[in-house]
Image (cartoon, rainbow, N blue to C red):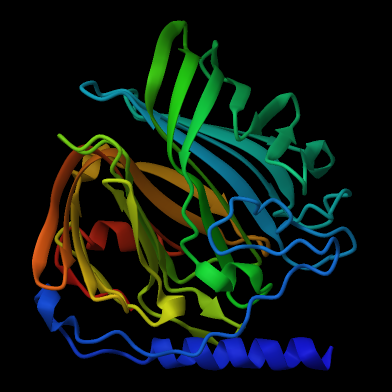
Length: 388
C-alpha cells in the first residue's frame, strides 16, 4: 500500500507540472519548448504478471474488477463513414456501475446505443446490469443479445415508430494508438481513460435502418474504449483515417479537462497521434509535450509541440446541424452532453522543426465536444471560447 501511495504521488507531481497554465499563443511556433518531466516507471498488473507496453493493444484487463463497489463506467464505441456520401454511423455498448446487479442506484444500467447521421437520429436501449458481460483477456462485450469484439459487431435496436436498427459488421484492424501513454496504466490517476484501440480500421457488412439497407465495403472506421469513475469538465475528440490524396494517414486526438487524483482539473490534457507515411507522431501531456486547444466560433483549433521538436496544428469544423447529441450517464446519475459529427472538415499540418512535412485535409472527420452543461455546445458557435 505504501508503495502504491508513493507511486500515485509521483504521478501527481509529474502531472501537476504539466497543468500550470502556459502563456497565450496565436501561432504554432510560439508554443515554446516542451516541458521536461520525469515519468515514473510503468508497473505491470500484479494479477497475471503481464507487462503493458506503451503501444500494445492489450488494454482489456483495464476493466472493472469484481468486488469494487465504487463509481464505475465503461463503453466500447465503433464508427464508420462512407466517403462521398452522407452516410455515417456509430455503435456503442456500455455499462454504468457493473457491480450493481440489483439496480440500487438510479444510474446503474447496461445499454446499447447507435446513430444514423444521414437520418440525424440516435437510438438507445437500456438493459439490466446483469445482462452485461465483458472479457478481461480479449476485446469482447455483450449486452443482452448485442455483442462486439475487435473483429465484429452485431446488434439490433427497436425503433419507436416500428421497424428496427440492426447491424452485422466486421472490422479489419489497421492502427492502434495509446493516447494516454504511461498514465493509462495507473488506476485512478484521472477520472476518465480513453484508448483508441483501432484508431484506424476498415468496416464491412450490412446495416438495416427502418427497412433501408446500407452495405459497407471496407469503409473507413474507428473503435475505442472509455472507462473511469467520473467525467471530465469537458472533452473534445478529432479523428479521421480518410485524408485526401494520403491513403494510410490517420489522426486520433482526444482529451479535455479531466480531474487528476480527485483534486484538480488538468487543462489541455489532449493526446494526439498521427500516422503518416508509415510513421507515428505522438503528442502526449504525460511526456511533457505542449498542447493547446480552443474552440472559436465553432472551429476546433489545436496546436502542439513534442519533445522531439515535431509540431502539429489541427483545425476542424462542421456546421452545427451536422452534430448529433449523445447522452452519457455518469455513475452518480448526472447526464453528460456529447455532441458529435462524423463528416466534418479537418485540416492538419505537421512540421519537423521548421520544415512542413505534411499538409492534410479530410471531409470525413469525426469532431466532438462534450460537457456536463447542455448550453456549453451552443456557446462554442457564437463567440471566441477559451476552454478552461
